[in-house]
Image: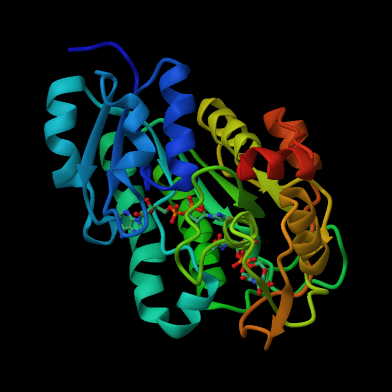
Length: 314
Ligand code: NAD
Ligand code: UD1
């Protein structure tokens, strides 16, 4: 049996997941990725093609993870830690298909927690979301702000947080829920109409094509660079505390209109900016309070938006 600690990353072929795999392998873990490749890509993990530290297993978390992990643990020993990122990630898609969102985003979390309980996993770090808050008047949003999600996606992320807390308190599974704000950076897939706004704007602006803003563009988001998010994930995995919930953002917000102008400026092409009707189920304002992230996990999201945008555009 190998003595290298084994970490599972669900959704590890995706945007945040593949950066997480890079960091965990660099930190000395053996990693097993579970992914159904609905939005994730093997090419995101191509840099580890010659590594004996990475296994990639096709698996739908909505159907359970025991069978997928059995051959891996038979070879490498028990799973020590799980980063649970696999999800249907679009707020808009969750409004159109709430049952699918529930099966993947809530059901998948229950399957992961059942595995962690049965196998004595030492930590489950979960990708929650700023979407659990819904429309909050007072900014920045604190972790104890009342949660009033306005989309099925936000509801399923909040239900997952409750499940984490239940498994921690009743079954002793150590858990951390990280409420990511709007994550951006290289490898974010721009090809779906539901993709993250920075990936879409960057893709279009680089080609000199027009950008579309849904609504008047006054909605704000706290955009956090993927490298900073990964540092929070790694810190949460190694953190001895359980039942921690922490925002992962920068503490700053920018309007979508200002973002569009910044991306166009950085690209130096003459893209037009047009407006289309606002999307339903969306929050209007979003900015994280980040004291807990720095105090409990020692992480400060320090990448400036302009630097993160340059890295994304390059
Ligand atoms: P992504 O789409 O790149 O990654 C999701 C990954 O999960 C993909 O590899 C996909 O193939 C996989 N997946 C989807 N359904 C699956 C299933 N049923 N079984 C197994 N794998 C499945 O998106 P991302 O931005 O990297 O998101 C990662 C996590 O972070 C998600 O849980 C998302 O809800 C959360 N999150 C993201 C943001 C953001 O701004 N990107 C913000 C808050 C929370
Ligand atoms: C995003 C994440 C979600 C996460 C949440 C946390 C994605 C796809 N969604 O949701 O997983 O939980 O942050 O805060 O990563 N917009 C435009 N034009 C476009 C695309 C988007 O104007 O071409 C606008 C949207 O209407 C929205 C804003 O940009 O107001 C951000 O949209 P989007 O990137 O889809 O993210 P969220 O809905 O905030």
